[in-house]
Length: 288
Ligand SMILES: NC(=O)c1ccc[n+]([C@@H]2O[C@H](COP(=O)([O-])OP(=O)(O)OC[C@H]3O[C@@H](n4cnc5c(N)ncnc54)[C@H](OP(=O)(O)O)[C@@H]3O)[C@@H](O)[C@H]2O)c1
Image (cartoon, rainbow, N blue to C red; front, side):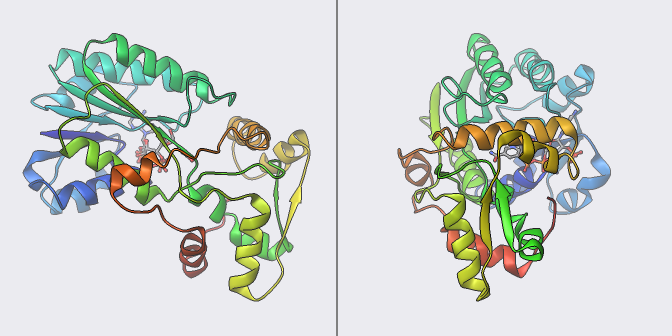
């Protein structure tokens, strides 16, 4: 049995979709904080179990009988470490043999503030004695394409990453990598640096949007502090802080990667920026 935490999140749902193509639904457990959000998964035959990273008892019960676990990192910035440790402890008590964890690209050397919590989780998992796979995910395209509607409205994207390149990929690419690692042998005690095959700058993203729209959308680079202040009008201040920090570090290449490990894992090239933009233009969702 394979358990996926955070299964009602964006990435988790894509992982469940991928698993359903490879293993019987009865072998998949969606471990979710809010079971009411998972009726559709239950209807597809997936076992839905309540699992809150903040409630250790719920975790142990949710993990019973499982052979493998995908721990999808929490979105509760500043509290990842304690929450993830609770999941790892519960996995060990439940006798799980293999834990994959969605970490951050180059977590051990990354200057991003958010890397600290990921690295602490990685270290705890490695010390647990369970077999592990560290899926060090790069940036999602969706982080940036979600801003397309507001960029169109304002005539420009804003950011703080200058000419830094992003080896970003679609959430669906990262989900497929997780499915590969969960459903094939040979991934014990592995570390994968996962990024897109075609790194790009924010100006290149703006140029792609302009091309597809037939209308100029620029990229305006801002000092980190100014960018953070603007972001904080749209997202919680803790999120604004880590996003602005990530942008500033991306300027120096912290979110770039040319290992092509992700495409090797999924057996195909990663999603093209042009396709991600086209998708976003079909279903625009404004966040910031
Ligand atoms: N690589 C990147 O660019 C990038 C960008 C953003 C985030 N991330 C990281 O990747 C993770 C997955 O991304 P995503 O897009 O799927 O994020 P998401 O849609 O926000 O999903 C996060 C999931 O975590 C669950 N969760 C939060 N707190 C929990 C708790 N206390 N107990 C149990 N579950 C809890 C949420 O449950 P509910 O469904 O009940 O809310 C949700 O299902 C994020 O959580 C974050 O750590 C990576």
